Amino acid sequence: MIRTGRHFLQIPGPTNVPDRILRAMDSPTIDHRGPEFAKLGRDVLEGIRTIFKTRGSVVMFPASGTGACEAALVNTLSPGDRVLIFETGWFSHIAWRQPAERLGLVVEYVPGTWRRGASPDEVAARLGSDTQHTIKAVVVVHNETSTGVTSRIADIRRAMNRARHPALLMVDTVSSLASIDYRHDEWEVDVTATGSQKGLMVPPGLSFNAVSEKALAASKTAKLPRAYWDWEAMLKNNQSGFFPYTPATNLLYGLREALNMLQEEGLENVFRRHARHGEATRAAVRAWGLELVCEEPLEYSNSLTAIFTSEGHNADRLRDIILEHFDMSLGTGLGKLAGKAFRIGHLGAFNDLMLAGTLAGVEMGLRLAGVPYREGGVMAALNTLTAERQGEPVYQ
Ligand code: PLP
Image (cartoon, rainbow, N blue to C red; front, side, top):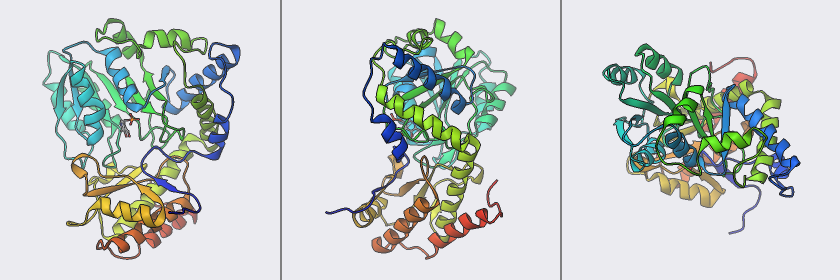
């Protein structure tokens, strides 16, 4: 089929890579042990810290986000350590529980409904009853990409502190960093794991750990085997801007440009933009009469929205029809949401008209697929977007 114009990539990551970043990557690969690289390395290692809101170290691996999750575990824990992982959806399982079990950790997987975030009360209860402090880490996915639910990390940290429990706090920000407010230092997170391909607007292939002093200290005695993911060699080389092995040089050019773009817009404005788009998308869903997967308004995700199709209407068929007719990719339902829900990504390099086009594609698709809905979702979103621009804030 002949396609004209631009494809709409509205999955919740990888996200659309802005032309500025594509152009920045379109440069010769340089000697990764030479002086020009050292400057690039130092620039991005320094710049990325502001995005995590940390004064501490951030390490980068040439890997996808899952690599950063594995790195968080192997650098800080020992075989047989107990780890509390909150079931928030597909990614709490595939990126954390499964690797942790394969690595020989003892996982306490706190059951969840996939419609709410990790419960701070549950954190308090589980840690409160662990009087011997056998739980070594608490793992939470900040923004569960399979459900569009954002967990409240500040509240979880407060619950940990109230319980006076020394477990490390590990947070997955793969689909929230640089799109939803996140504060590594202020929330006393020990390891934040993320990837390049979502809020950071860079193609897939870079992953990151922001590391607290406490996590660094834990890494000195942690006994899980590690080689490629070892922070020590990484941090030693990073001091002079280098890496212990071949870095993803061209992705780092892209990252440098992404950091410039985020700085120009201002991180708080980036969060506000995502909040507007999240709110407008939810206004459309409400107007359509469809149901959000997230059932707790305090935990609505601003980077993506997961939506149930009505009973008897396969969400993947809807997605196929939208791809075929309108050249737009939407996120599939993952795990137990397969066929039942679809996801709209509204993160990264994105603006009001891209959102309007995205929602128009969904509304037309609903009609073509015969999914029962009420008309007016796009209009509701437009009203939300323009009301805000006329100085009537519709979000906090
Ligand atoms: N965690 C979350 C919340 C994710 O959304 C993803 C991927 O989408 C991952 C982990 C795994 O990252 P990757 O697919 O880059 O390995």
